[in-house]
Amino acid sequence: MTDFRRTANDVCNWGRWGDDDELGTLNFITAEKVQQAASLVKHGKVFPLGVDFGSSGPQGAFQYRQNPTHVMTIDGGDAEALREFGPKWLKNPTAVQLSGYSESGPMRFNDDMIIMPLQAATQWDALSHVYYEDKLYNGFPATSVTSLGAFHCGIDKVDVKGITSRGVLLDIVRLRGVETFCELGDPITPGELDEAARKQGVTVQRGDIVLVRTGWWARFLETGDGAEPGAGLDWTCASWLHDHEVAAVAADNLMVENPVSAVDDAILPMHMLCLRDMGMMLGEYWDLSALAADCAADGVYEFQLIAPPLRITGAVGSPVNPIAIK
Image (cartoon, rainbow, N blue to C red):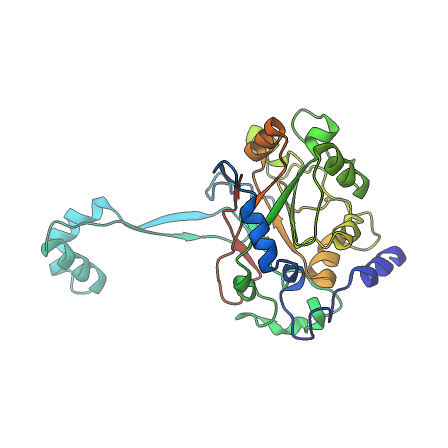
């Protein structure tokens, strides 16, 4: 843990933007940065980076996190039945109310709801998602995350940022020349991030959101196996992200970082360094395949990225449907 402790001290941003800061590295996204990102739109090409939220999603391997359940609360089959039986069903005020809608004119409607973990598919980790030694980012107490939600560093605190910035894709699948995805056993190193940027002719700048393509999502679409691990960022990439003053990082795999920890007695060390020490949000399960194909075709690996989370009060993560525009 000695190297980890040293790195944690090196990347720590506590107090950098004030003792009350809950935005972390999103502070790097300035008005000028947003303007720069908008200037990158040349052709109006839009690339949705979110995946489907449904029963065939990637969850299930983790017992505490399941795929979304979609439930219809009102559908077309209810309309005529409620018209006939609703007015007499006095013990069910909902049926009475709905039957009244049917009687008042030709309008009918459908309603539905979804039950799911907030991190079921394409999502952002809020800074309150991971902590250690009883502290969140910027030294806020871990006890401030209660059964009612996160008082500090919740996903709702970042709504002032959008989130939109210059996006940069680093395509490790293409760099390594693998067919589909980067297999487990060969973590992605800081040197590879530099090499990918150099070969792609792109420079990572302050305030960028870096997207890393590992090919894991493409592999999942082939196999349907959400538990199959693949290579992710080595924990030392946290220093690389810190040195480049990146605003956030996202990947097409299930945890951004390599699933096998190279730090003794520590699970997900990069999560600890990014979320808790650096104040950097992580994006997981992003679909980067179509974007990567277009970037390879035109040689342009920078774009406007728009990825605002839902403003869920006190949540430690949020679903998102990110959009890249070129």
